[in-house]
Image (cartoon, rainbow, N blue to C red):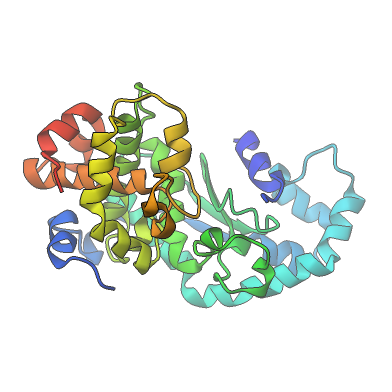
Length: 324
């Protein structure tokens, strides 16, 4: 666990209009009612408030309570200076209004849904928010018994402290994507890495991950799951057939070309067809296609979430009869 935490804390800073029938048919047929959700043991701690806000609390006391945030090789004077650093204090001040957005309750609600569908899963018992110098590569981390949230990466796309960050990244740096980040952090517990290296297998793995969102955060807009703007989601819907034909006609589905991950699966300002499609396309369009295939499979077969997570990518595609 300490390795995950240290990576999170010390990682350097890196450079509603949808098609109605799809919204209705692609979500779980019946979501649990609030009264049906199980209670989850959850402690919520604002580390940034203790470290930067309560300067009267001795550093030694904080280190005893949170030893995993303080590598032994780092001298105390570094932490003492950090507590009063003007930029850190500005970041801390900017995060305070976020807690008017029901952050603890929203975290708990996601974990309740996870526990409802996977009651035997040993979920994190403690959620800790903290500052990470706007490290948007690690916005939420599942560290076994802890859920860590980089709270300074949820200030809103137009926040002045995000000046210089590319727009396609800033689009995601909003509290409305909190649920998506938490689910993505937990997803590796439920979605296995594909054994095959094909483009299809990787798209389907992302599709399974995104399907978790339909179950674990059923009340948020569908485009929030993949962290698209509404315009990006609409583009994907409008060009679904064209994108699929491109993948099929260029024989990409069973290709193991590593460059396809860069072109269609990893974050970027747009997907890379190397055609006129590039200009307005959202990045990660391969993830979105994988999501649609998985949704089509569920709609056609009626398979449960647990069954879908165990199903092979090629079987999913074949039985989905996906053909937009």
